[in-house]
Length: 220
Image (cartoon, rainbow, N blue to C red):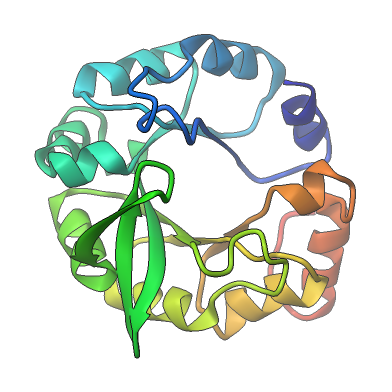
C-alpha cells in the first residue's frame, strides 16, 4: 500500500495488483488489499489473481477496483469472460496472458502464475477472449520477464495486430529505451513495469519525460 500511494503521487496512469500465487495456491484474492488500495490511490487500478466467478469480480469492484483481471479461470471456463462483460462491461474485464515462445512466430499460454503450460496458442486465445468480451489484454512474456533485457517486441506486436483492444506489454523492462521500443516497434498501447520502479531504478516521471522527449504522447 505504501508503494501504491507513492505511485499515485508520482502520477502513474494506472496500477495493477496481481496476486500471482492465488490460483496455484487455490485461494481467493485478498479483498482487503483492494479496499486498502482504494483508500490510498485516486487513479484506476486493476486487481487479479484467484478470480474464478462473476461474484468474485463483483467483490473486487465493490471493494474499489476499477477493473478485474482473469487468467487461469478464464482458460478453464471461457464463459467467465462473457458473463463478466455482460454484467459489468468489457472495460472491467482485463485478460492477463502469460506466454512463452513455442516455435517460430508461435507462443504458448501458461496458467497458475506462469507455471503450467496449456497447449493453447497465444494468438488464437486472445482473439477468442476478445470475441467473448475481454476489453484489454495484459500480456506478459515469460521469456523476457525478470531479464531486464527488454520487452518481447515480436510477441507484443503479434498480439496487438491480432486484436482490436488495448494491449499492455509486461515483462523485461530494464532500460528507458525498452519502454519506447515496445510502444513503437511492438505497437503496445501501454507498458507495465514493476521491479524497476519498486527498487528505484527509475521513477515514473523519468520514464514519462523520456517517452515525451522521443515523441510519445504521455500524461505528465
